[in-house]
Figure 1 (cartoon, one colour):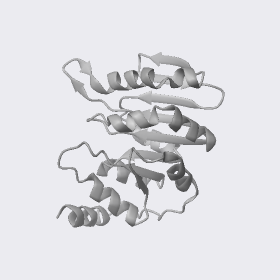
Figure 2 (cartoon, one colour):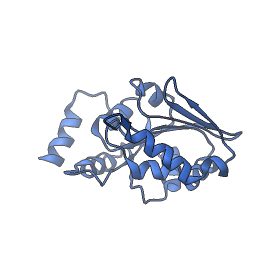
Figure 3 (tube, one colour):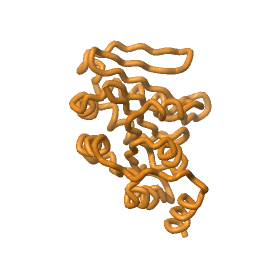
Length: 197
């Protein structure tokens, strides 16, 4: 019984990652690997009164047909803007943003994260297995270099949305990553200086 957290960041909607994880292929991969809980933090991007991230997530949910494919019950909780899909094998909880994301990180066996430096560091500080996914749509994107550096140092795995996630998840479940040291800021400063300097 394992738990996966997908975090896409709080601001820009990482559409490609949402498309990837809200799919029959991805959910089947989780089930095949014995993962019984999936948390998806899909973003909190708004324009005016329109919640872009929520709208994209709902549209992707309808487009993907996972509710029908997996015979999910669907519950929308308006109080905390959470969507819960569940069957006898897996439960999926999706939400736009949480000020307590560290609680979700602590619960997770594996975190699949956008390549924001803060999200990477937060996950590694809790000694969680991490898969970093780069959002190639961002302008002036230094995520690729930072993700590559963390992966090269064996702190995490790295993949792209077009990759098959199942072997990457299998590796994350079984691979012994380096333990991230208690931070005094020097590792992060070194990585950022090397990659951005």
